[in-house]
Image (cartoon, rainbow, N blue to C red; front, side, top):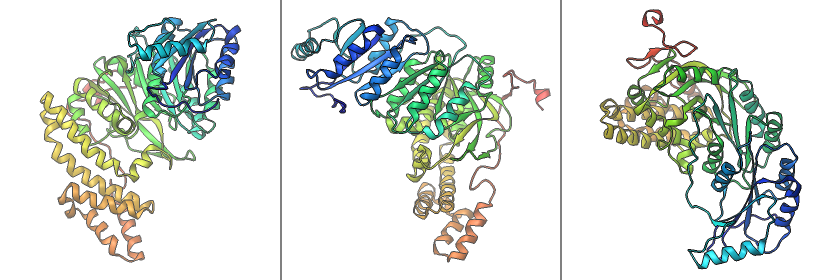
Length: 502
């Protein structure tokens, strides 16, 4: 019975058995009847636990561990009630048809099968407990604004980093936080660590585990589904937050209602926790005009990690992008640009995020595929396209300059690849730079790399040493003045009078 359900098929559609607000006294019997029957073969079980303390969640976990490929479980951090749970559980289902079970309702496989067969043959057939499930994601209902921050933590096989990640959330100086955690069927100890924290902070944490790896979009959707905060952070499970991260971001957003997002500086940590400082992108904390920041986004990413940003939830809908590749690498870049078109941006220069760089990260894998340059090339053209609709001349005019800068960025990645002893990737970045902008061949760094390929071993080492010591080449070593019109802010988020700021 612990086999993977098959995808939807017109002749054998996947049936989602939807269990929520179920009476603990009968839950074990209900689950046993589901997994011991032979009437339905292609099914999944989705179970929402409504923050119970009567042993229901322990029963759910027991069955999830016995049938991990069949069962997705979710535990609310507080009681939501059957109406909301019914709404949310449908959005989690992967089947074409759903069978609802709540209270003490018995599971009747023959009845479910007969209803599904009737609905397959007759598109107008309807039943009360067995239904057709919507094919498209249904947006969550509006929730009242309140000073709550949602940390959306999505994970797959980052158990070796997860404890530090989750500890950093609950060590925040700002207390009104909820953690929305989703695990994409990890094969390491991630789920055990998540459950440990869920037991310790049951009233502050939603925890979800997919029955299989459905990809990053589905994992993120689990987090979004549960979140109720006025502000939220897309938090990678290999990163960690400094204690004042949330407080500083909330201060800035509360003090400046027209700011759509708050962006912090970062420090880098490696697989062993060794920390490396990076200069802030801007040399002071400030509020930046959205249009000015949009122009900067044409020239630089500003935030290499998605975890560096806190968003105002009410303005995000319709400004993001989905799709596995887009969402993984550039979905947030598109979201950030779209927000800056209409709203100001708060920048905090202190390194309040610890961004982890390691061999298994998405960033590392993207580097090997030239995504940091090729992706940005496409992205900048998209930004210019969006700017033309809004007649943002400063953004549009920077497109040629941005392509020249991408060529120089390719030179930087060529050098980084050589330092990492990856000559194949270095050669690809080297030629990509010239393809992006032929004028890069006049740059001293590009000429040195050109010499590198024909040099002997000793000269190669000398060239790398010269390039590595070049200012702002291997990595950014300087901070920039904020764009014109930016307003300095203090740690409490309030504007600093210009006389004091200077």
